[in-house]
Image (cartoon, rainbow, N blue to C red; front, side, top):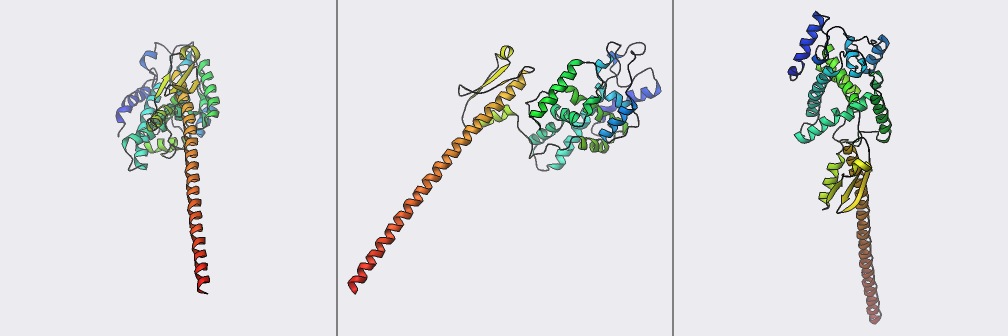
Length: 329
C-alpha cells in the first residue's frame, strides 16, 4: 500500500490502546502526564449520530469521532489530553494519495504540473475549510478558544463574498481544514484502512471537485503572466502594510490596484493583484473592442467605396451601351 509508512505508528498506538487503558490513543507524548487528565465532558451520543449522518459513515469505534473533533484548547484549564493532531496527520497523507490517484486517472494525458495544481486545489486549506462549513462539521468542533470562534465566523462571512474557491483571496482558519483531515483519518482507521470507503465519503463531502475547466489561477501569478504578455512591468508596494494594512500594485510605475487586509499581508497582496488584474483586463478589453470597431468601420468604408466604384462603372457602361445603340438606330 502506497501509504503504509504513514499509518504504522497509528497502528502501534491503536494496538496499545486496546491492551491498556492507561495509555490514551493518538496523543503526542509531550501531552501525557502522570495520572488521568482533567475531567472534560464527553461528546454526546446525539452529536456522534449527527456527525455520522453528515459524513455518511457509521463508526465502529465511536470514540474516534470525539477524538477527531477535539482541539487542544478544549482541555483548558485541565491537564492536556488527546487531540485530533495525529488523525489529522494521517488524513492529510491519505487524501493526498487518493486525490493523486483521482486526477491521474481522470486526466490521462495531463502533465505533472497541471496534475499537481488540480490535486492541491482539491485538498488545500481553503477547499477543506469550505467543506467543513458547507457540511456543518465546524459546529461540532470541541474547543475553548474564543479567537478560533471569531476566525470561523469571519471566514463564513467572507465566503458570502467569494462563493467559490478564491485562489488565495481568503484566509481560512486552519482548524477547519484540520478537522476534515482528522475525520478522514478516523474513517481510514475505523474502516480497517479501506481506501475506497474513505474516497466514497470524501468524494461526497467535497462535491463538486475542482476540475480542469474550473481550476482558477493564483491572482499574483496571473497578473505577472498578463503583464508579461502585454510587455508591462509589475511592482508591489508592501512596506507600508504594517501601518496602513494596504498593499498597492504598480504597473509601469503607476498605481493600478490596491487592497486593505489586516490579518495577513499575503492576502492583501493577493487581493491587490486581483484588483489590478480586473482593471487591466477591463482596459485591455475596451482597447480591443475599440480596435475591433475601427477595423470593422474601415472594412465597411472600403466595402462602400468598392460598391460605389463598381456602381459607377456599371452606370457608365450602361450609358455607353445606350449611346452605341442610338447611333446604330
